[in-house]
Image (cartoon, rainbow, N blue to C red; front, side, top):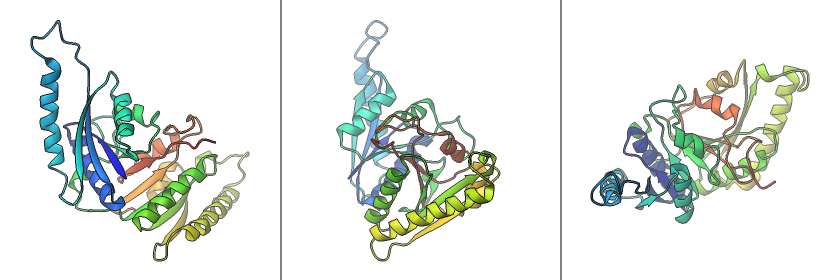
Length: 286
């Protein structure tokens, strides 16, 4: 397995590398760190080979990024040129055969642990691979591997694909899995029933997937479930216990094209309060 880190020489880039290292160790994967640069448009404005200058600078940045990777993780670096940064990242990740793309935050964007820049926003609304979002400051964490996977499970079409991906990650890494149903009471209305009925349905849904997970996970890998409610999605997420080393996996919105990502409104609200990495999984074919 290979994981692709979309790198920038910023604190967010260092966070992405740290997340890549953590997931590579957890999944026994190789790390590919890449930079996508704009093509040479400077023939008239600059003397000399501007593309060579960019390549030389990017090589220095990538060497510094690779130096952040411990000796127990295999790492390779790559430079590519593309008109679109997001499209270039996707193309490079697919070229190296990566199973997922790691990205870091920017200085602006959402308030909280995560801050999405324009390129990352484009990736989480179009990529055909899972995208792992590193919260700000992850580079400072001393945790070496993922402690537990949380699967935020809904009832809409595509939830089974997310659940299967989370179970496979838990099985491969031999780490605990937590299945969670989040119930935002501000979204409960006559069409969905009373709050009590919605909570009962969420509990039954989580329990059924808990039983399914137990049949697919090896002995010694624990699986638990939680159903939490709150006035809003953010309040429900805050009720959950989180530890350094946790990762949450979410599915794509129903608006996503098949085999593509589309960060939905619920996941976007969760990002406002989460301090742990989030992995967004593409919509399934059906």
